[in-house]
Length: 64
Image 1: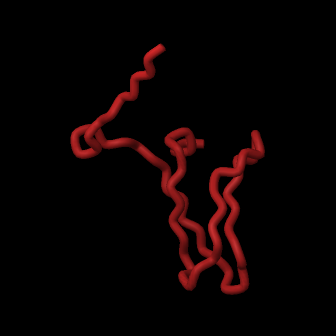
Image 2: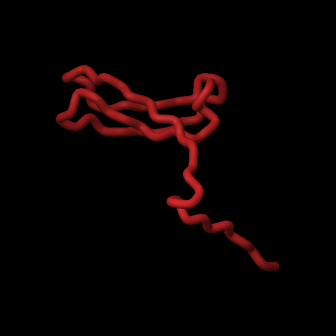
């Protein structure tokens, strides 16, 4: 059984992704991004010194 992987040069084939920008409270310890329908955890980030965090999400979340 052979497994094939499709490898593309990102410069030639740009991918569409969703970017979520969140303003965090100074007292927040972490940020958890979840899908409300499936309760799938998409990302967990610890709060850093910045007030604004940008999170990359899969292409499915561009419109919805």
